[in-house]
Image 1 (cartoon, rainbow, N blue to C red):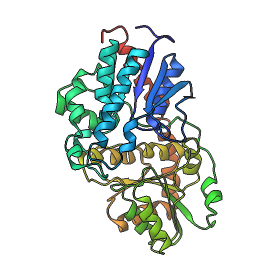
Image 2: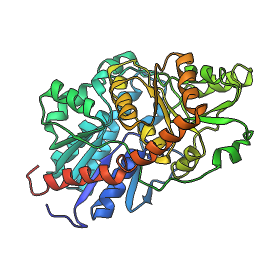
Image 3: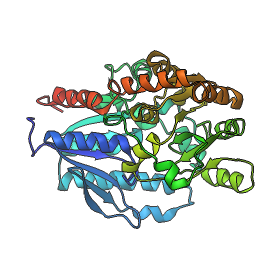
Image 4: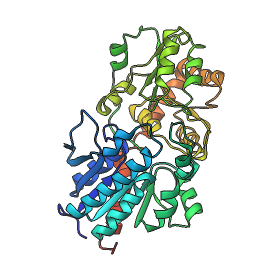
Length: 389
């Protein structure tokens, strides 16, 4: 297989492909390199069935089984139908590589790759065997969630993942060659000045701003973060994102439980860097609720560094290693509001420490960026070129 426009890659995701930054960056990079990339995603009302994004195609598949919401067999039906549609796509538009994002697309990727005589790449966004669930997914499905990874990871021609610790654990669990680590870093950009948050939210000029970006869900230290904000009268807390915990946080704000807390919801991916750059400190408060979270290395950590702002992050192996080695902020217990408040205060109320952490973040941004990480992705694809699937 030689590099060129006829070399097709089908990436597989079980989402609607509107806010998946990792998939977008990988697809864009491969498309710019000369591959013809299609992301097979899920259709929902209001979204186009096909569209172009940054040189690659998004193909959203209509699932009839999505109408079955609330039924016990609905997740299984949705899962099987997606696999069938991807298998049918492999017959109609065969690709040379099927790139499965997350374990839930591995069976579909395996079937499609076998039908097309193609390569299978597995992209482990987290450690599936170490996950905890904060969802309405029935217990029977939660118990078998990691089955696709166990069943198909050894069938992949190449595996990549998001952190060194997750790579080590995948080797330990499955005795596979060490996966390629491609971290979730943003594109490098020169540090920018922005007032986006203050303008949109009309924040008082005297307030410093601590921002959280990402899914608004359990296990992210959000309630401890908002409690910490109550202990710092000159600091505002912003939660930028959407998720199942958002209504409860909104209710707390409306009831007066949370002062100086702002919940603007989800914004377009392209706007996120400006929002982050207009904050004073970024929060990464992943809780140690499961092994997957313990070993995680969230993209928001690198987004804060890329924007040149200091970070307050969890005392967990991967997150703490980056913060300490790069000197970009403070490491705290993500479940202790006072510890979080102290971590923010040690940066926001100590000008010399803040200036140093900010300078270190700008320097670290030249190390942790997509230009560096994308080279590993391209090397992986070059490695499988010419090999038999």
